[in-house]
Every structure is written in C-alpha cells, then in structure tokens.
Image (tube, rainbow, N blue to C red; front, side, top):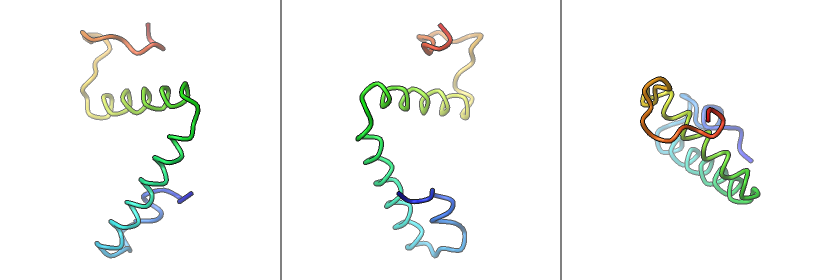
Length: 73
C-alpha cells in the first residue's frame, strides 16, 4: 500500500510523475476499500460523504432538510 497522496506525490514530484503516483495511490485505495466487508464499506462511504459536506460547507445540522446521518439520528 502506498503512503498517501501527499507523501508520494508531494511538491517535489514533476507534474507527470505526480499524476502517475497519485493515480497509483487512488487505485490502491479503491482496491483496499473494495476488499473490506460490506458494512465497513458503507461506513467508509458515509464518513466520506459527511466529511465532504462538512468541508465544503454543504451541510448545516441545524437546517438540514435531508436525512440525517445515522449517528445523529
């Protein structure tokens, strides 16, 4: 397993090499996630979705109209 996108494709890597290393990292990540049991895959997907919403400011728990994440229900 690769070390992570920042470590393998840091600022020192040239553009083409950085893209190749990042692609390898993503491919390795997806293979690892796909080999996890189904319930863990669901939890990882839920965490990614919640993280994306929170990082992007898309989700406000006070005014959320959609379904709440299970851990907040």
